[in-house]
Image (tube, rainbow, N blue to C red):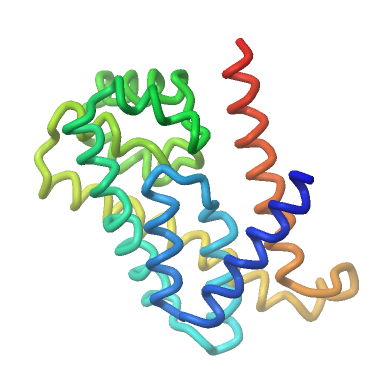
Amino acid sequence: MLEKLITIIAAWIMSVISTMGYGGIILLMAIESACIPLPSEIIMPFAGFLVFKGEMNLWLVALAGAIGCVVGSIPAYYVGMFGGRPLAEKYGKYILLSKRDLDYADHLFEKHGEIIIFVARMLPAIRTFIAFPAGVVRMNMPKFIFYTFVGSFIWCALLAYAGMKFGENWVSLKVYFHEFHYLIALAGLLFIAWYVGRHFKQESQ
């Protein structure tokens, strides 16, 4: 059942990008950055594949991804700012955000300060919910947006570039795979399965 759901999500992501183009990337990355586990590990590589096909531009893809991250992070920031940790703990479970995730994000923020916003944007899983503690400590908003944008731009560019390179080597890889998007979907499936499994494991401890 879970595998079928994940496959549907992956197919939907690809459909949104194919239909809406750069706007679809902004929308999907905004959802991912609003603490909803929609994997950028599917979104951006597929956009990179479209770069290879000549349907998109690599730098515009990365820009769209970074803009989406900023757009999605701002509501999460304000939830942390006005609702605080109690609100995140109460409702976080509905978006697979565990208390341990929040503890870890708080720890990183306390240890490294505001620069962790930049670093965390290039870390799987952590990037999804790092905006919460930034809001809780009322981090300066222009700095928050700047660090979020720059870190996200690098992350999105790297993932899109990887997708583009896979596309360039598709002739040699097609002997082993029927369609390139299956490869992207497989990577996304593995990531989501790990993320969901990790969440329920933490909740049971």
